[in-house]
Image (tube, rainbow, N blue to C red):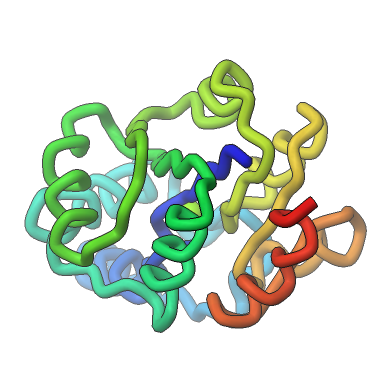
Length: 184
Ligand SMILES: [Mg+2]
C-alpha cells in the first residue's frame, strides 16, 4: 500500500506550539478543547499565517517530539513493505529542516513533500491511505477515493462521526485499527 502521513498534529503534538505563538504575539488564548473547527476564528488570517510561520521555522521544526509509538508504527509499516510518503502543509523552504527532523527521530520514509497541494500530490502518487488530522484533507482524500485515517482531535470529531474515517486516540490504537485495511 502507499501511505501518506501528515506531520503536524499527526506525528507530533503541534497545537501547544501554535497556541504559544498566538499567546505571545497577539495575547490570544487558544484552548485545545474549544478548537472544534478547522478555522481558528479567534485569529485574523494574517495572524494565523504569522503563527504558522513561527512554528515552521527550522528551530521549531527540529525540536518537535513525536507522539509515543508513532515512529515505531511507521517503521513497522515500512518493514512490511508499505511505501511511506511524508506530506506536510509547509513551505518548500521547510523541506531541509523537515528531512533533518525525520532523520533525527529515526522515521523511515520513501518520499517527503512540503507544499500546499497535499491532496493533488497524493492523487498523482496513487496514495491508498492518508493519515492526517485536517478535516478538509480527510474529506478531500475520501472524495478522491483514498482511505482516510486520523488521530482524534476536537477539530476533526464532527467529520469522524459523519464520514468513514478510521480514527484513534493514539498511534498504538491507530496501528490496531488499520491492521485490517493494510493487510487487505
Ligand atoms: Mg496536520
